[in-house]
Structures are given as C-alpha cells and as structure tokens.
Amino acid sequence: MNKQSGLRAVVTLLLITVVMAGLLAAVNSITEKPIAQYQAEKTQQALAGVLADGVTLGQALDAFPDETGLITGVYATSDGYVMLVTTAGYGGDIDMAVGVSSTGSVTGVELISHSETSNLGANAERPEFREQFVGLTEPAAVTKDGGTIEALTGATVTSRAITRGVNAALACAAALEGGSGA
Image (cartoon, rainbow, N blue to C red):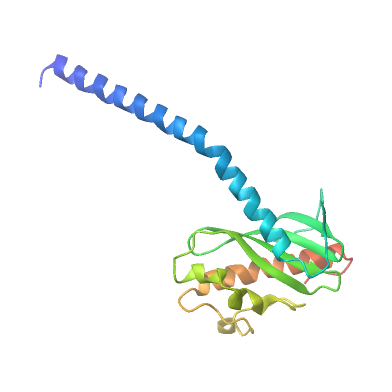
C-alpha cells in the first residue's frame, strides 16, 4: 500500500464516520422528545398507581431526608408520600415509585423502568410480586435473608434491589413524619 492509497483510506473512513455521526445525531433529535414524553407518562402512571383509593397526589418536595441515596424525588399526598426510587438491580438501575401512607404503611410499588432479564428479574412487574410489599410498616427482607418477601425465582438480586428501595422509601417517610426512619 502506498502513501496515497493509505491517505485515501483514512479520508474515506473519516467521511463515513462523519456521516454516521450525523445520522445518529438526527435520529437522536427525532426520538429524544417522544422518549422523554413516554418516560414522563410512565412516571405519572406509576405515581398514580401507588396511591390508595381516594388519595390525591400533591406537590413535589424540594428537600427530603435520605440516608440511602436511593430516593430521587418525593411527592406529598393527601395521606402520606410517594417516593421515586432508583436502586441497582441485576441488569442496571430499577426506577420505581413507592407509596407510603401517613401511618407508615406501604400503599403500592410500581416499576417505572428497568433492564432486568426477561422472564426472571422482569417478573418484578407482576402484581403478585409487588403486592407482597403492600401493608408493610417495617423494613423487609427476602426469605433467603430471613425476611418474608418471596424472591423471584432466579432473580434474587432483583428482589433484593426492590426490597432495598421499598425500605429506603419507608425510612424516608418515617423521617418526614418525624419518626426515626428505620
């Protein structure tokens, strides 16, 4: 290969790279708003999904106690709080909403987004798994760790992650209500 053909190859690769980067930027600009809108809708559905009957969602709190670093947002409700939680699962972050009544009882758990394995960790979306948390007032643990939460088959990491997120929400709600926070 001579110098001229080597230069031609470099220029060709550079042009291909520039064109592909431009195409990726164009696709990103086209899909960015719909993706953000979809994510906002999923979050709103999750917020509504964890409220007990007759409870209304209020404003987001500007500040809230969180010793775990898992709570990303808190909304006041007419009877407690809804926490947005991000916890590390097996496949990456799990974003979820957890409702906690003014009496310190979990009213619901909804997943917003996750990257858990299909038919394993993704089964955390099933109501029968999430309903185990409803009514909890104390920190929970999966049965393998001596608790009462039945872990998903083949997805103990995911089950522990969601349990950790619910526990963080309970602690935050307790601290907001003036308790010690578990």
